[in-house]
Length: 542
Image (cartoon, rainbow, N blue to C red):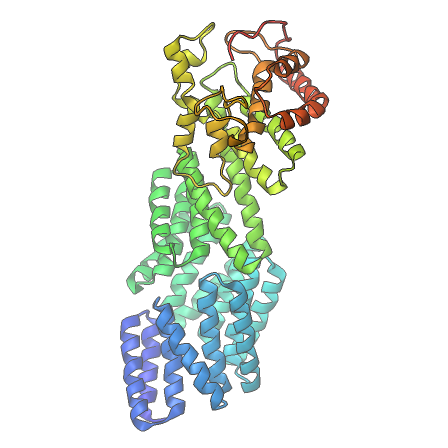
């Protein structure tokens, strides 16, 4: 290889280590022109692959992918398998960052085949590291450990110090996930010693950011903040948006843990702004963190919107990867949703001293009935959330109306009957994975068309609202209100049967079959809560 090209490649590599992406790209372009003038395909392919990796690290993924695909095509034709392996490894990294985990896995395996044929220890080590990262995303920590250790051995044999440091960094993160915090600290420290020695600023920034998670696990937010500061400063200086977004996410977690919710929100929103449409996994994780912060600030509607975005992103990733770890995160998000809507439901009840536990009970009655109707298990998860939020609009009804004993005036009744529309409008900006808004708007509609707010009738009323109405009326009758004592389950059921035309007859028939079990639940709740004994009072307000 011409000495001038060797010098140019060495200079470009040094610029990469320092994070000087634009200078490195310019130097690689100079090297390519020099090699092109000499007509040496080996030189050209070498420059092409290095340039592709540089473009990827600089965030220009489309250009990087084009260059690397070209390198694969040409090098494979000339039997230059090491070059093919390195180029494919770069393509797989781009696929992984875009959330295409199966595509990345397939490409890593192709790259590995080429590198085995070429005996390229360095690239074999990098490939094993990247496969370990995939295992980590899947939640298979044992497999990740095996890949990381195999990669470390390849990299040490190949004398690739930067790669060794990156492998140690990965082992540090893995041990944080496993709870082996002392081991994690040792791996991180060894990695930092290497990158300091070889002047690898880029990897140093990544290690500092990743160590923040270790310090958070140790309950040391101040050390986490200091480590994040180091990584963020490097990422900002290098223009590395990906690392900067990761650091901003950790800042958000640190501020949340230390009770500085306003600062947490600012940093998390900045991380989302960078990650959106570029790093779906990072955005999904950050949106979940943002939801926790917003919930702590009692901004429930915004918290639901953040949870929904996170859920949509993880669901999209699962559709493309079918990974167990993604599924676990989705399940956790659904628990977060339920916890949030449950607490929001309790805040609704706080204004009405007579309805404590109403949302919880209605959700239980309604979900039992929905199951009998044939609703799927997954749909019932979201149906339960709608049941918790069905009276959301009552937060805008004055307490003196909610708690008024006796009959409401026409004006007061109009305010009260506005609450389904108010709740529907409050959720207008939240796109749930399963649409709960029909339940909120139409749970007071009657089968005979004499309900409110839209006077819908029969099958025009969403099935979820028809189910919910039965549960809502039953609970209203069997609990105390400002204007009457609670009725016995039997009396409540009798009144409901006499209210011909109020309920979907097929769904009510299922309710009739279930009534003995629901009666036992009602009585058990009363006993546990010390509720008042039911009285044979007449129903004075619907």
